[in-house]
Image 1 (cartoon, one colour):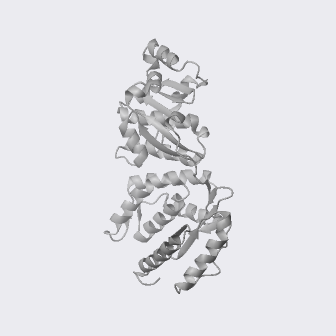
Image 2: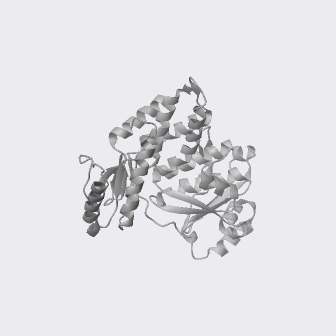
Image 3: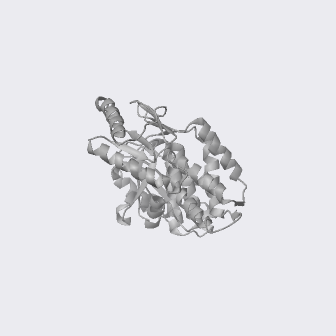
Length: 349
């Protein structure tokens, strides 16, 4: 593929082959000159043979040393897919290569275009298995696009440095193996909800709950309610993340800004960006996916009672009346006393 247009031409040709193969009733995906098919056991061998015939009829030569007959374990685009164990795995050599590149970038303040392209390519590959890491790819890609107009060494923005640090902090805890996400998104009554007021927060999940007054340094910071709402969600994740491992869950929240930040992975506010990095870190460690759903404040009753628990005895009474017979655990009250805020992360330790 020496020509500039070669990749585009190759993709168009394989797109045509994939289209014809689908018309024959088989499932297939293609990327440049690579094909991968997925079929049930009783149809896999037939699909494999028919794809060979189709390539021959189109005058396309197959690379036999790369060909893999029907199997539950196959490497495609550098990622090992295991449909028996439902795992996605990054080979050890590629994982080590990414770790070395990130170490190279740890203290960089400027870089050449070629180095930026290499970094973005490696992390984009990594994000195909580490789904929460995809949040940061849009910023890196935007930075790469802007770098094409510059010459020489290009300054590394602070937000890029923080995103790189996220990967540096995460990779030592990652063994290169991720679970395939096959579960349906949970229904609203199966998920957790949270709420915050200016002086406290609370959360509810399947009979488990917590309520807490914010420590003084949080209150003295005069944070916007949007920040406090997202902060309360992080507390919920810290408490119940082990219950979400390998699942797709929904967060019910009455703050539209928090919902937008979680679903888009974007925010211009530095504090919300810190929350988002911590949010994604927890999701990556426990391998769950999250979508947030906006809920009217009048419908978010239980977390609202919990977040205001300390302001009046009536909220405790309202809460117990609403959940009579469905309580499981009262999480320790002082959980939020261990809050910390740094330039990169915010949450409870």
